[in-house]
Structures are given as C-alpha cells and as structure tokens.
Length: 172
Image 1: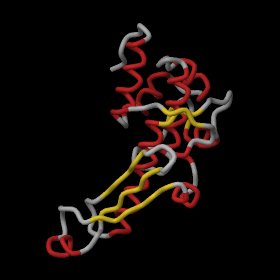
Image 2: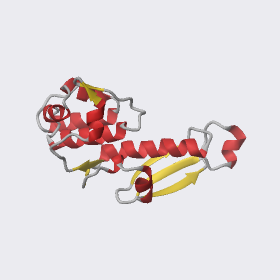
Image 3: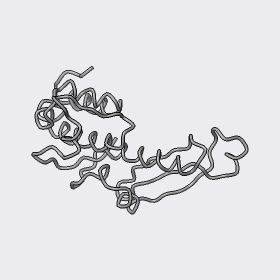
C-alpha cells in the first residue's frame, strides 16, 4: 500500500458531495445474487478517487443504490488506509464524541469509522507505529486504540510493519 501524504482534512472525512466530486464512478455487471436480473442490469458500483487512484467497489447487493452506499464506504476505508495527512495537536470532534471514560465506541460499519481510522493512522504512522502519543492525544488507552485498529486487519498490518521497521515489537 502506498502512503500518500495529503493535506487536512482527510478525504475519508469529507461529506459525500465533496468526495464524489473528486471521484470517477462506473457501473458494471458482475456475477452474484440476483439471477437473471443480475445478468441484465449494471448493479455493481466502482468509485475511484481521481487524485490518488484509490478505489472502492461493491457488487454483492441486488440494487445499485445499496451497492453505491457500500462502495462509497469502502472507498472511505481505503482512503483512510492509504492516504496520510499531516497531524494536528488536537483530537477531532469525531474522536471526542467517540471516546467516553477512556473507551473508544465505534462499530466498523458506522459512518464515523473511516474518519476515526484515518486520524488514528495519521498519528500512529507519524510516530513510526508508536501508539502511546496517539492514545494520549485521543484520551484513551493504547489497548483501546489497538482494538479500533483490529476492526480493520489491513490497519493492524500497516502499523505492525511500521513497528517492525523501527525495531519495535509487533502488536497482537
């Protein structure tokens, strides 16, 4: 995965209109549920963030609108994983709203997940994989921060690769 440096705010946090304005989209026919209907209608959706080339796609739903929503969410997650932004000294409002008494509350399918993931990775990767500074900034424990990362296995791999490259132990 390439880690492209981007200026804040992170594209994973943009509203739908702004994000789609920077994307190319296409509809496709793909195999999957839906039988004969599936073979005649372009229900698969692919979005590509034009500045970075990062894509998100979905084809598992029968309706194009359902696949559109899933593809957009996947694009946001992929952007969160592959684009790095310069970091600020303060946690975002999204982070502040999701941390209660040191615990991070988010479901990996919630609309806030890509924004939280992107901000966490921006801070962690700026510290070469060290979770402590980011945990302090977000007012949570390192284990809570790692639980968030574990919701997206590619994020764990990225952080562990950075840690290994900097002589730190891998997180499990």
